[in-house]
Length: 122
Image 1 (cartoon, rainbow, N blue to C red):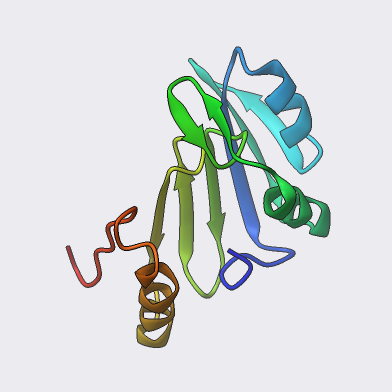
Image 2 (image 1 turned 30 degrees about the vertical axis):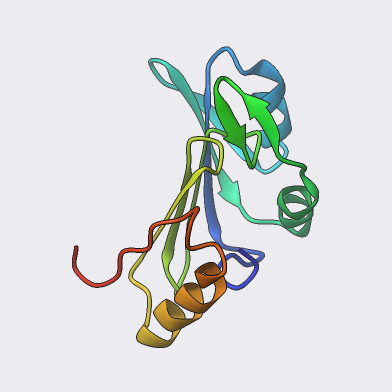
């Protein structure tokens, strides 16, 4: 994640409205806006945010083996559009350069039984 997400990047964290502790924690990184069923917190990536994600221990949550406490994390920068969904159990990166695609394939190849990697245009 540190390869693609950097301090100062555009950040959006989405939480379900009932996730009050998570909304409170995410609000340290941006301004919350309530929507129908979710709260969207928009801001920028900070060192504290990156440390939180790197230090967080996986947990079981609502049937998920959650990698993060946030349901959705979206980050955009010049390297890619990075999306973490369903508490970090699904990751999508768009607009990657060819050398970054190779990097991702190399990193995730050791976990081939746990991840699916799709490259190209679909």
